[in-house]
Image 1 (cartoon, one colour):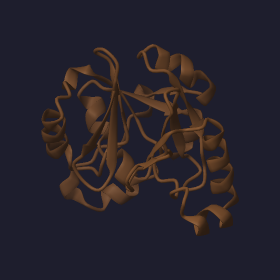
Image 2: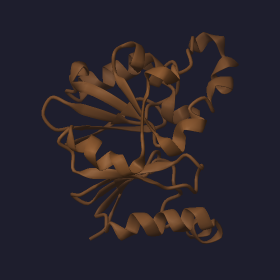
Image 3: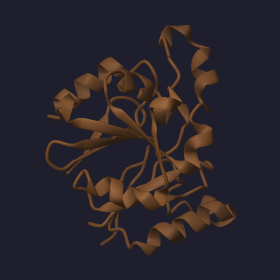
Amino acid sequence: MIKLLKYGNTNTFYIENGDKGILIDTDWAGTLSKFFKEIKRNGVIFNNIKYVMATHYHPDHMGLISKLMELGIKLIVFDVQRAYIHYSDEIFSRDKSLNYSPIVDSKATIITCKESRCFLSQLNINGEIIHTPGHSDDSVSLILDEGIAIVGDLEPIDYIGGYENNSGLHDSWEYILYFQPKTIYYGHANKKSFT
């Protein structure tokens, strides 16, 4: 079950199977109260959210992660993202009203993309995480066996200019399409379904 949680400018996705779930992306720092209103509106039980991950570490995709970790949610970081965890710290530090605390690296669980299928299976989720640079070098996408791809901020596949002029983006889309997704969920754009 995938739920779209919209409480700012970024799409947050929640996947749950049973009483264990994972959040993919969060919005900007300082939106925690909006997040709680949104999960309540969508019938998401906070205690069922066991993990959070970011498709990449730009501020509008990871802003709540440190707060959620303080509340007991575990952060999963993929090895290709490790060097980017603190990419947004300086951006958030400019606005003291956000009361932002950086992610505590030692409390994160770091796994490889190759280990992701095994990790997700522990949540009764069939799929894997793949490295999909193009928007940023730390971008990853979630590919579910049921035909769903969550791709963060990769330029939409039908945005020809970005696709043809960025070899990293081109290669990432080729990799995603190898899995033959039926629906693609973006970080900001509307989903795209293939019929």
